[in-house]
Image (cartoon, helix red, strand yellow):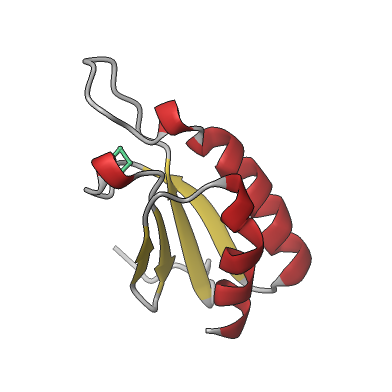
Length: 93
Ligand code: FES
């Protein structure tokens, strides 16, 4: 193992976990569309921020779940309407 040169100041994780067994998951609630639009908005407004899809963040019933690192901010019930506020949080925190 060695340190990676691919370091970002902030990391935004969007849960894109999908379940097929009937349990709630973020993909059912539109997290793939949210991921694409949030990534575009953050890219336009912020530098040195990585937006990535991730697996389950353990908040399935209250998804869509988004986490902002390194501030350790977890957001639940995120919708497309929340994108401007998330961009502000990422930019200003
Ligand atoms: S499926 Fe998204 S938090 Fe669990």
